[in-house]
Image 1: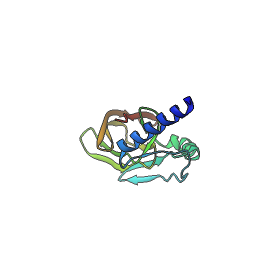
Image 2 (image 1 turned 90 degrees about the horizontal axis):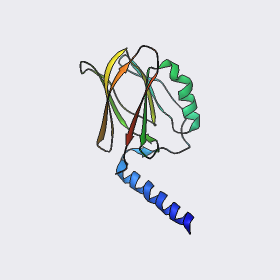
Image 3 (image 1 turned 180 degrees about the vertical axis):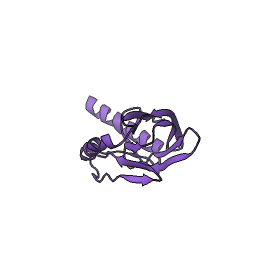
Image 4 (image 1 turned 60 degrees about the vertical axis):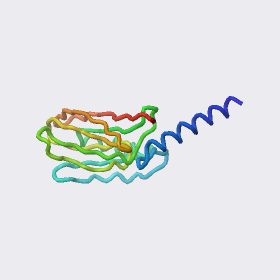
Amino acid sequence: MKPICILKSRLLAFSMAAIFLGSASLVSAAGSTDSVVQTAGTVSYVSGGVGTESLDQLGAMSSQFNLKLVFALKSGEYLSGVQVAITDAKGKSMLDTTSEGPWLMTKLPAGNYRVVATVAGKAEKRQVAVGGTKLKTVDFRWGSE
């Protein structure tokens, strides 16, 4: 009887997370491995990380970037479909995109930035100082309520 209760509670938690997320998606173990570097103005970026092959591919590319954003629920489930806006210290938009997976890596000029990541209308904001070459990782976590 106990395993059924655990299964029911996991299904309930998953259902609640799905309702909370709306247009964002929980990331499954299987997925695309086509991580293509894109550009927005002078900024290059890549997103993905759906499945272990994609995570491995992005990990191998990480030396090309200096900022890595990771998106997940507080319970640990990764998210995709997160709206991301990055502005420099003067308020100039550097990147405005939707992440195709739980990882978004970008190459920005060294400096200070404001990163806003939004899921289902709930924005998380971070002030980030980025250096020239060393990869800085910033986590964004949302509750399931």
